[in-house]
Length: 412
Image (cartoon, rainbow, N blue to C red):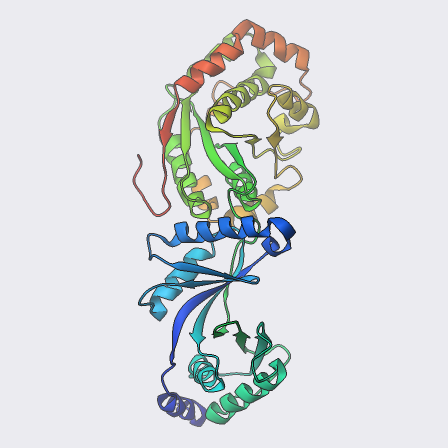
């Protein structure tokens, strides 16, 4: 052990215990820009935070100007770590800081800062912010004072630009928060503030990312999966369930609806759809989704379409799909390429699930070549022969509901 390391250990043993409370300090994103509606957004966000951490602990969420303070009874550093990590999945949070909540006196701030920096190596800086201007020291004075104490105790060099460690001090109305580092959140808007939608969930890479992006814009989503059963096995259902369970961490209370679609696909093929079969079956999926979404109180359908990614996703074909329903179809991936989509799937931890093998219903009974410039009139003729309105109602009546819960590995 070096002389510097020995000195740091000895200094840590001499640091007085922090007379404070561990808590989580949350920084909000665009919620703070909502003007007269901000109160409503913050209430929804606070409710979402409480719901997300309920399996861990009952918490109080205290709203202040631009920040939330999350406190719980008998908090420990380990419990606060778990709370902070879970809260980073809540849409609307930009940063989650594991902080010490201390009294509004300089001595308490010193003790917390010394505790945070004990045992570290490298350069450091202190950054202070006074939300309460009645505090006797200015931000600059507090930076210098606490920085001098840390340097005196541990001999750490100060570097104001790009330090290895930053000690942050925020003086609030009733207390001071001291923390170092933080966990990045999802940003966006609180789930539920933008209404409700229905995601057409395949087992592929794209639709889970589309769902995530719409949740991040405040939309609460349900999920609809079309299985090839009875002509395929249940693997695609297991996969869809696993995907929704992973996505549930972003909103909670997710619902997955599964429709056995194999016989309807067989009817489409028997109708003489030929090269139009893929577009015809996707139009039927959208019609079925529209009927179900209206029953669930949804106002939009969400798909993972990306322009030009596959032959069925040409601009002409997407226009033909829009014609099938009155409800708006949201396509948050429409301008993204596959690499971008995969990168986001990897970040939200759905990529490895999507890459598991299964028998996708979309390839079941599909023609060798799909039409890239489908004519709406031809599709309507096929649908007239099939009586698709009645068929969509029948499919909705056959739906099975599952409730995947984040962290639960059991299929309902």
